[in-house]
Length: 339
Ligand SMILES: NC(=O)c1ccc[n+]([C@@H]2O[C@H](COP(=O)([O-])OP(=O)(O)OC[C@H]3O[C@@H](n4cnc5c(N)ncnc54)[C@H](OP(=O)(O)O)[C@@H]3O)[C@@H](O)[C@H]2O)c1
Image (cartoon, rainbow, N blue to C red):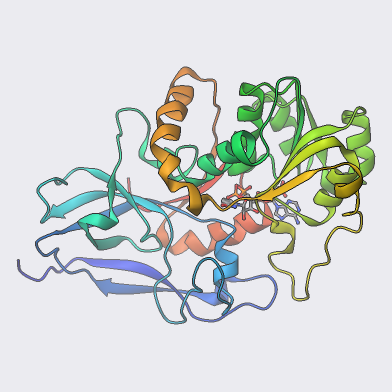
């Protein structure tokens, strides 16, 4: 196959933030895109995901994911269309999901791409409700902090990608009362009117402990923690005996420049005999088949409502990422790279 003249743009990390990241940490670079060799496909990315965990990868610290390297294209979940193929099983025109986002084009080995079924859901759903955020929500309320019939469930960052799905699935699996927290009255209204929560608390509007005592006077059985910090502390106060907490994420501390202290009331985990359990979705990717089968049905029959906030163009991907850290999104934050 001959060299191509396709030019694609990609986003590189050029400096590491201290505290809140900014546009100066990124640069957009044009690169020549090669043709795929035998066993490879050329993908034109149509959608990419920006996710809170990427903040940790901007620091030069080893964690469950390697840090982004300076001067190198970033990566993350994306979907795209195959525009040239050296793989018989993946024809031109197929839609694939993969982990080489933050760029407009990518050459992948066949094993790095998963062909997704666009007859049961839209391509971008595989980055949201049918992607890792949806699977995380499902794991949280079924396995990590299983919801039981009649439970009261509290979800933080509830208007976001994981939270909006977690609240609805909690209801589906038997919760009698579902409460969400979000920043601002508009998101709170949306939780109740569009995502079917029973009540919302606005963490910017005053004490979470007092607000939870009002909306859940009998206490909560399950807490899906996407935020940590003040939310975890308030939830611990509100937990009922034998309650369960899914430790999903702690976004309130991701830009912290000093170690974040744990909740001052952690001892109630003993006195109330609570279970606090962490989850990393990457341990559970084998559950995708089963989950997508069910969740595509819920999307189709309307019992799982999803929303997305779309930012247009690769050059605005940093803006979308900075936005998700600040709450600029409702539902899943996505970047559309091409239609
Ligand atoms: N364990 C896993 O495998 C796994 C997988 C996926 C995601 N996660 C975690 O799950 C959480 C949600 O991720 P997501 O992808 O669904 O993002 P998301 O909820 O769609 O977006 C993040 C949201 O966090 C809220 N937020 C930001 N700073 C906050 C603060 N200081 N206090 C309270 N809320 C704050 C913002 O909403 P408001 O406008 O309401 O502030 C923002 O919209 C994150 O902690 C993420 O790291 C974990």
